[in-house]
Structure formats: structure tokens, C-alpha cells
Image (cartoon, rainbow, N blue to C red; front, side):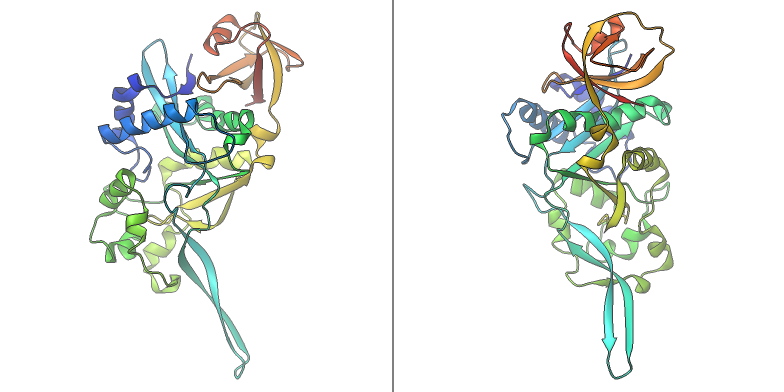
Length: 338
């Protein structure tokens, strides 16, 4: 059984392995031991903090295989983007010009550097082992974050965003970066993403042009990247689309990947999750699949369960799941259908 839980200091070696295997565009998961250790400690402090409003906290989760002592994936929530450092993105909207004399109005699509997406919660750091892509474990890794938000709403904004990794070639080249960012920082795409991960995107964004960039003036290969999803990022993208997230008018600063947005009141795992009192009891293992989580903070646990009947006020969980979720008889458990 795989269980999602908060990261712990002992996870550092396994987290380094996940970082080495992650996409270059997953800037929240850099392959740097000290940075990962700082992230773990920051997450532990966030779970322990007495928080009544969203701030700089980051909540880092890992998908743990207790039988093998391995991590099979990770995901993260930043309580509020832009709280500690500017959160830059590119706004994709037309620039409209008018000529009264010719009676002509014309709109040209442009990209403009902005901080519009600050003050939203940010879902980030999604990575899962390749053999689990397309399985219910990917749903657990992504959506259990939303169950955590449902249980601890005061810690988060009313909305969430997520940046999906954009297109880059197998050898690490991004046509979007080569056409835009590389002119301002003589750096390859992979190196720019690494520096962004280790520091912040603000020191790079500060050197980006402050005026609109006319999209038709970019090479066609770069234009084609705008709003496109890297093949290995499609899993995270499609899960959140099914949750009710939608693409908006913003794209990533470095690779042009899309940004998704949702109000929490409309997110499936938040809006349609229900709470029941849990008891240990038999299940056939062939019933409908549900995601289940306890309602705790630092001891948060989530797992995939199969229920023979839809839960009511009470729900029986098989003893292995009951123990994995660290429940006692009568404890509340949050459930949402897979």
C-alpha cells in the first residue's frame, strides 16, 4: 500500500533520487541536497505552525511505500504565491490599437511580464515514478493535496493556480526560451530553470523586458510552444482539468507552459468530498475506489481505498488502510470518489 504523508528529514536521500529523475521545468524540485534539506525543514515548520491565514508556508507531501522504504512521488502546496518574493508570469492578451482616421481597430497578441497571480495558493512539485503514471496513485498524489486544503482551509487562499511544464526537447532545449529569455541571460534553458529553482525567479525576471512582447514577431517554433504541455507533464495537467481547473491567460516565464486556475469552491475533491466516522471492518477489495484522508495536520495521511458500499455517517475501512491512515475508531475520515 502506498500512503501520502508530509515529508520528513529522513526522506532526503530518496527525495534527491526523485529530484534527479524529475523534469527540468519542475523548478520546485531541484537536484541540490542543501536546497532540498531546507525545503524539508521549511515544510516541517509549516505543518507545525499555528496558522490562521495563508502566508509563506509550503506543505510538501511524499508518496511513500512503507514495505520497501521508498518514495514513489512527491507534490507540494505553497500557501500563497508571491508572499515572500515576487511571483512573475507572462500575461497573454492582445494589444489593441485604433486609428480613427482610417476607422481601423486591430489587436495583436502580446506577452507582458506581470505579478497578477500573486496571492493565490500554488500547487507545484508534482513528480511520480514513471511506472505509476496513469494509475490511481497519480490521482492520489495530486488530489490528496486538495483534500488537505479542504480540511485546513484557513491556511490557504480561496483559489489555486498551477504552472504546467511547457515543451522542451529531449536534449533540454526550449524553443520558447531560446527565442525570448536567452537573449537577456546568455543561459541554456535547463540552467535558467536550475538557477530559478535554487534562488527565485525574481532575479531573472527583473532583467526581462518590461514592455509587451509581440507574439507574431517570435519564431513560429516559439509561438507554437505558448500554452503547450510537455508530454511528461500531461498527467498532472489532465488530473487537474478533471478537478475543474481551467487554463487562463497566463503562461510560464521560461517555457511558455500553461497556467491552470480554479476557485476552491468549484474544485471537485474539495466541493464533493464528504466526512464520515471511520471504523475498522471488512472490505472485499473489489468495490469502488475512493481517496481517503484523515483530518490531521502534521500527521496527515491519505491513501486509496475500495469500498463495497458508498459511505454514510459511518464507514468501514479494512484494517491495513485504517492503520495506514493512523485512525482510531470513530475518527473522521474525508473521502472522495476516484
